[in-house]
Image 1 (tube, protein in one colour):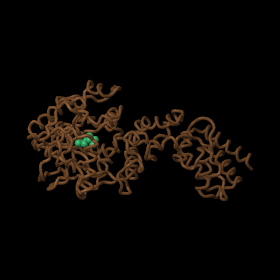
Image 2 (tube, rainbow, N blue to C red; image 1 turned 45 degrees about the vertical axis):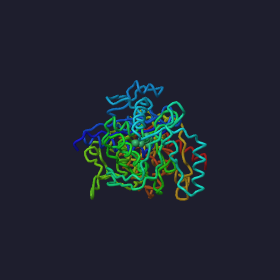
Image 3 (cartoon, rainbow, N blue to C red; image 1 turned 180 degrees about the vertical axis):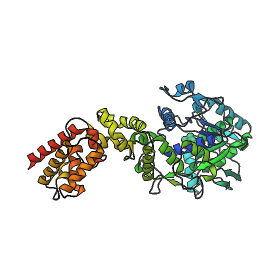
Image 4 (cartoon, helix red, strand yellow; image 1 turned 60 degrees about the horizontal axis):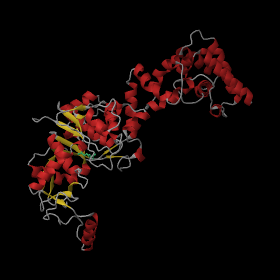
Length: 496
Ligand code: GLU
């Protein structure tokens, strides 16, 4: 590519950053990085009614969490104009700013005036009532409803309340090469003089985004496929203004496993809920990139570092048909990433998850068990349930899962008595020694491993599913383990 690759993510700050939108940002960022280009954040806040305070912060924090650096974007001064709390937000600024559309309205007005002066647009003062009436009449005549062109030649004055409409040429024939889908052509564009400036003076997306993409020298516009029907208008705007359009790249939607558009019904969709559930940003980044992109035919690789993604990413391998968000696959991948963490990093990342639940564990116990927990969780949010038995104080035990036909109360007592004797006699209280002596106990009692170890596990940890038994015992320490076994004996005594 000869031209500098400049891509942008242009969210409307109307709410949460949906993971589908995030994928668009990710591809734009990867494309820029791959070509040593520039990635830009632009805030499209011209829909004043839908703009939500805090949404820009939410988006920018999301980028930070994912480790996506913004090369150009709102400066601190710009952010302060639109957000009340801008502390710690990335605010790179740049030479094509402002990067917040509500701070660029004069620019759009200037271009709209130019379009009007050159006969490509006109002011329209039709009231909503007039337009409703017009549509009702068109429907009655079985015509496609839409603006009739009433104000095209009326020369509506600047001083009356008005909108600005683009004068659609008659049956334009258009085509373009989409960066993902290849050639797309239109021989009939059913758009009727669309509005480019609203009555509040703010531009619509169509005008604002085209002006900014041009002014900010965007080379590739990566956006959702829902914009394909509006693309003829965008191409016509470029033509009217005598500008060369960027390469439009329309990304397909992300679907849930039922084939419907991904939504909250399927699971988490906003970046912060993934974070709160204990997904790692690197895993999510890897996973989301693979929804709709693959390195190429026959390449089975699934785990990619950021650097590898940057190196391998290209638009030709973006799939033009919809990709499916498979939560199970994401969970698997997250587990792979968790296991690859150093023990120290795992401890640092997992700690807040159990502190949040008021689980307080002596540090030595946590240090001892953490490497074993790391091997067994897919999500960091699974950690608290795995380590709560390490707390000091009273342990709740699932006694109903210990006592059964196979392990009646008397047998449970025998198992516990035997284990206590073995543990008291152990020279070294290590997982290895525990395994040897307690396996010997199984043989001596002529029992199976299952019932013996379930009994001991519930006695010591309270439940059936925990980190491995001997390592759990080692983490608790000999006195605690013996204490818990004796306490269980008392409970059994009491019950029988
Ligand atoms: N503001 C538009 C949206 O949030 C951006 C579309 C685009 O990337 O051009 O849908």
